[in-house]
Image (cartoon, protein in one colour):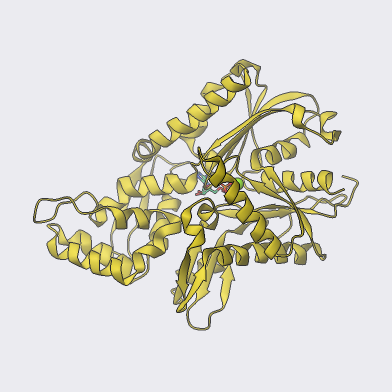
Length: 419
Ligand SMILES: Nc1ncnc2c1ncn2[C@@H]1O[C@H](COP(=O)(O)OP(=O)(O)OP(=O)(O)O)[C@@H](O)[C@H]1O
Ligand SMILES: [Mg+2]
């Protein structure tokens, strides 16, 4: 790379964020936390003195038992009605928009610190759809993200689809022309683009002709966590069990606790009163004791982290043991790969259908695709990988930098767009 870019690329991810900047002779991604190239999209508000930590430090502070509030999966709020709402932090109402602005501002500051310069222009990544099947809500989500980025000091902003950015990263390594299907399965969304790449094409300013189709669906790793939790873990806390009056216990608290961006809703006084009421009427009291321990200890994120770790372990192993000690001393739960595959099978069907539709709408036969380029942490899920690979059995599979391809590609795009 010979040029020095004036703008950076920012990949604000549901689970992890990166920032990239093109400089001669150096790789694009900027170190954001202790030399690491990703900043987990996590914020922790300390109750005692109202200071705020980010990324791995935020997770560590929460796990160390500091009083405060942990927020993860912030990007999932974009495109929902919750974005206009607020959460309570240290006794004051914090609008979710401000929370997102605080994180994006920190991401920019860290990128600037690593680059030793200020950035006022950036290409921001966005999923192909922030919101499925609602173009207006989708546009609102993009506008909200643009407002947030401006608040953080970025004056000139362009957006790029995350899978197209990943394609630019892949393209920087190819030596011949190829038709590529980019498969980016992240924490919040699954995004695809069908694009012609090549050494000659990458010099073109306008790539519209090369992009045959883009598509996506609002399904990602955080949904896999939720479905695994609801199928295997929440039942041990009473989900699906009966009350003395014969009715099934209400499921809303379990949904909140299994969904990263709504965990804190289970900690309100109203929730506690409802859970205590359910416990009084429950048949299997021990299960509700676990639920009460979870809420009392504010261990919702801890449990979700155990579920996520189990999910990741099941990408490589047929079974894994989950630790439940914080809510049930001495207890564990064994999860098997088929449990996970069964829990996510409807989601995987939807992702697969999105790919089939994309190819069909583009008028491209699977055999015409030279390469499938996988990126995003959730592309490590074996069932997904198998299903997509078997749809495109004749294509070569290439694995990108699962957590860095988007940020690198956005940096390449920033060089082109703000040269
Ligand atoms: N080996 C693995 N197997 C399965 N899932 C994994 C693995 N490693 C990470 N993940 C999951 O990948 C997700 C994070 O991936 P990534 O960082 O690409 O997402 P993101 O860019 O933050 O999200 P998005 O692009 O959807 O906004 C998390 O849900 C995480 O649990
Ligand atoms: Mg991503």
